[in-house]
Image 1 (cartoon, one colour):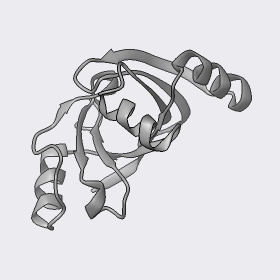
Image 2: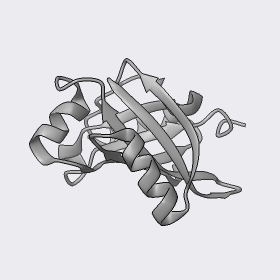
Image 3: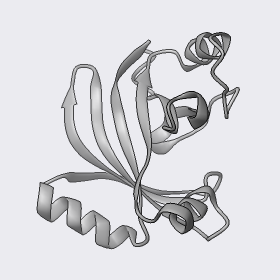
Image 4: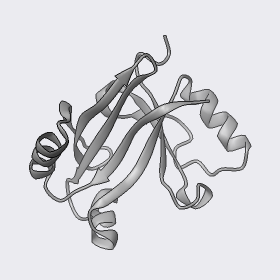
Length: 142
């Protein structure tokens, strides 16, 4: 069901500073920036690697305000790992299977994610304290 680690989401206070850090220290390449109003973030995707299974990235997340999920996360925990995104080839089937297995779904239907992907989140209390995002990129369904 899971095909790869799609990305690791990292909450940060200053997106531009963190992009510069990951580019200069680790040599990562910026592949996308966008504002996701629905999720309340400015985000950047920096490519770590690419293979036949797809691209793996670091996703940097800067909140649009303090009352957004990432804004609240930063207030409680500070900067750091926010979630792990796993690639799937069929997000609807993955949600049905995972939900049938007793894991609570924060999203029962996919929503818009980075770079045109369809995404859905699983409840962290049912996943060992880790917020998990399922990601179906436009090329995953081919």
